[in-house]
Image (tube, rainbow, N blue to C red; front, side, top):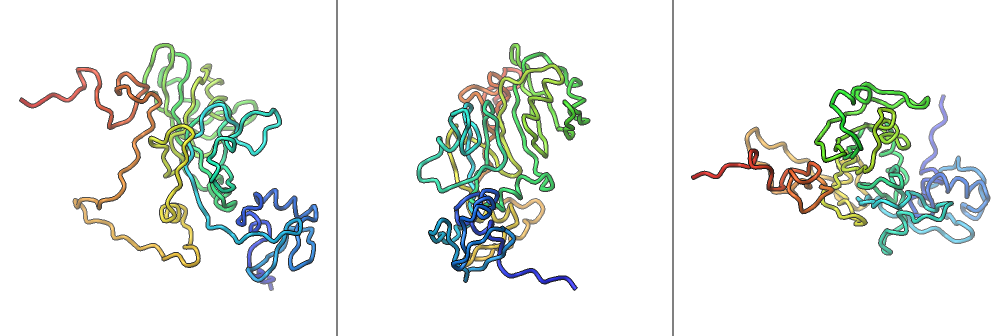
Length: 304
């Protein structure tokens, strides 16, 4: 017979939810002998604890676990996605508002990349969103130097290997040519280190701008560079399939409207991020719907 699972949660998860550190860092703190449970020092993270256990780090009781939260952050270029940088470069944490609690990034964007970065205070949510098994599509607007043809991207759509590392097939569309550069939309379901840049370089193109515009159901929209916006708890819970927190009402099951019926009055979908705000669709990098203008031949005709 199998041994029943002890009640409660792993100690490292509890420390992470309490805002002490990420689960991985918490495990190292435990191994270093900095954590006690009910007055006894522990040296292994293989321990389940409950609300009745008294946990302390460096002799100080930990705070009560915070509810799981999620934020959208528009990462500007020039910031690294790490707590501390060995080269002394500015990090995203230097840019976040002071009132923000301790958060972890879901995945990364490299120094020269910009756009949507998800932030959370919960290590379990972080891991869930980063797993390739989650299958969420990450979409990027990419500017490359050169004059590509649509067929040039066939290797990306089929999947290619660069320096011994295999990249899964990508969804690629050639949007428009803009002088010496071209704008391309690239979507993928797992993001390896500098994957799009390396894949484009393998085809002979240099990426000179890369913007993540969505991560699964979460959109960058018109969020300004450096701005942070918290995802409403109900939206986060519904999208991630989370159980309600203690004391939080269970989600209402909404009936699907009858075919042909108008949708309810909800929050309109976010407009796509436009890297060249203020310009018309034709004058920008491809822009998004909702921007008026365009060339005379595709502008709607007035009715007389």
